[in-house]
Length: 341
Image (tube, rainbow, N blue to C red; front, side):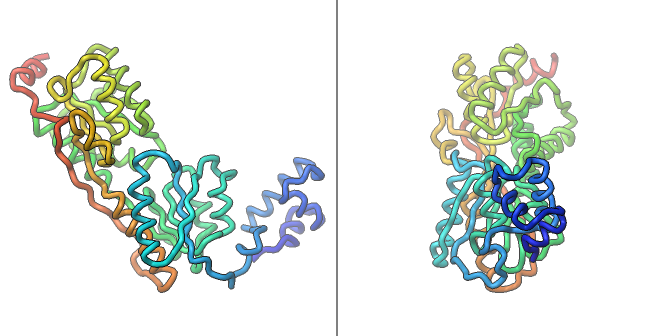
């Protein structure tokens, strides 16, 4: 492991200067501090004593890093992790990655302040995660694949299949004019769900209309505003597939405010099957991705990899279409009118 002397040597400064720079002291000029920090990154230097000690004591605690601790999407996932770890007599530290490299999560990860980590945070880069992972600090990543690293495992949901089934559900019920509300463009979940949507549309020889592809950022407000835009365009689709339930609920609220009835005038389908989807009016048709089971599996994998070598590194979780009341078959007379346009 690199020492502060190694960092000082690479940066061409005294050890005391390197120490001041790494502790963000004002005694060091910004240009010099940058040289020291760059050297520390090159050497993968960790200033925390616990992180430097290969024979450090076990904490019986797992670190859970989420992009955002708020919101219903994460609650079932956290519960799955917590219940499983509790049954194994392990503790849990949960923190948000908001702030990127300056966040508490990023610091805890770099300093390995637990026995392992479960990560669902797109703003933490692969290299940052790879630097932290090692045999006595295994990591499970969700929503991404990091290949060829012995201490990193991946649990991903089959989002493409789920997106395909959601779109096919609408197509099989006569819908040809279908809008897609997208999440963040850097989200693997969103990318895979959209690919599934596009595959189903292409197989049915249905053109994808650019004006019906809108971004909602995976938030209720985003779904509301995107649907308001659809309404203002004056040419509504017969169905909306939202990339997650939060956006779908926002979309239904916008339609309700505009006096447009769901599903009589327009069908809506979401993705995630959050608890709220069962209590909307009408109840939301959606795709379930079993967040509790994803969390539970991740916790089991971390525990097992602490105790023994695990050969299998990548796990794919299936999805399930949950048909409720917000989607319906397009009435034949309406279908005929749309096909003539």
